Amino acid sequence: MAAAEDAVRAGAPTQEVGRAASYAVSAVKVHLDRVATDAATALFDVGGASASGRARNLDRHWRNIRTITLHNPASYKAVALGRLAISGEPLPVNGYF
Image (cartoon, rainbow, N blue to C red; front, side, top):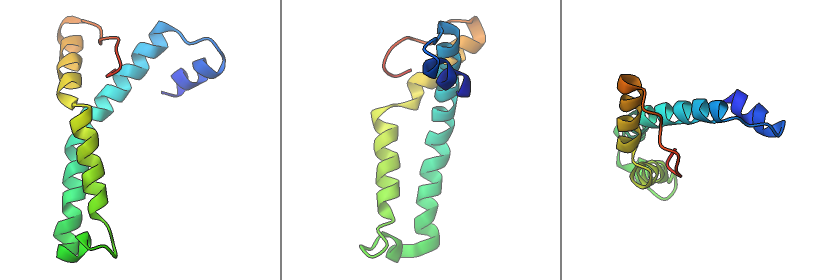
């Protein structure tokens, strides 16, 4: 990711750097969709019903995570990462990647 940011700042982004950044972001997205939802749910296990009260407003974290996971499904990224690993098929070049 740092290489992609450096390349853009230098005005010389390359396809290789872009592909590496897409791979890294996709892999993180697939992982975080699983663990972030579990972590946000654990807030309620620890805090009980009061965790969702207006005073603490912790339920907003769970809602935000669910919104992100639903609007940018990790399943597409997981399939694409699998294809890349198995057959070398490059990641798609679109807004999801």
